[in-house]
Length: 346
Image 1: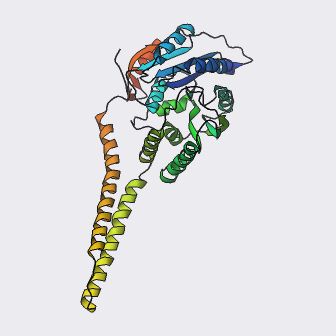
Image 2: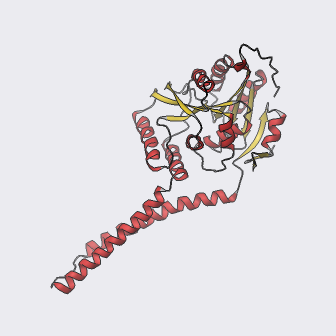
Image 3: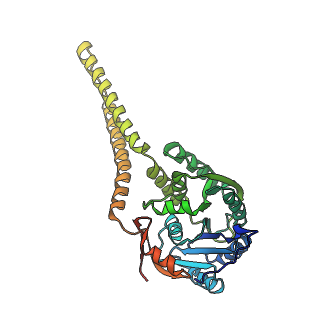
């Protein structure tokens, strides 16, 4: 990528800062050209030096070809093509590895998060805030069930997790380079970036906005992926499920002790015995089911421990376009004392 040399005017030094915009793309051929048009228009009016990093997350349509054509026309564009589909959160992480800006904006390619809101985020960043996240005041083009499930998603995570994620937010946010540096040091594979951003702290504020309907195409986050994302958020930031297992075990142990005392009382002090094969049958089914649930909860944690110990890279890069030499060297070496989680297979 050709570096842009700027002569900064003393009257407006803020325009000499650099802004990186990371856009994760998966089968977005219908919208990617319009996305770039609006992004370029929104960002170029804010800063003289900027880059738009498109991460193609193993798309099976023509997204990669269209991104290459966009890069050929616009020197501000960087394209990172992953070797396969690694998932949205990993694709965004890949973009963060390559970002060079003093601030980095995360935005999806579907135009549900309006690029024009970035100007307000940059203003708050210049006011001294290091994380500026978008809060959805309305959600156009979404079903009542999707809105309800999203509402439950955030409130459930906040109820169970040890950190508080701002309600009704997504990954649409601006982060200072110091926050990005902190995120690069976090190596976990099951990632919820909005939770990780809350965990690192720093000075954060919100920018409310109206979320638009998708400009084209279909949602890449159906109910199944939302449930998996919620599960990752709860398990990654909370031990409450494990405490639930302990609570269940202690509770049923106490109930069993009371049951033994009750049975002995009837047998020794009365002429009645404890009747009922039906009660025994139901009790065995209940206890067996609870045991399997508890094993499943513990299995989720053990599975994540196993995935972390395999120490595989987070993502594999098939091709890059427009990446500066210094960024390329950094992404293949050591970042902040920790080995980079990316393996290049060009």
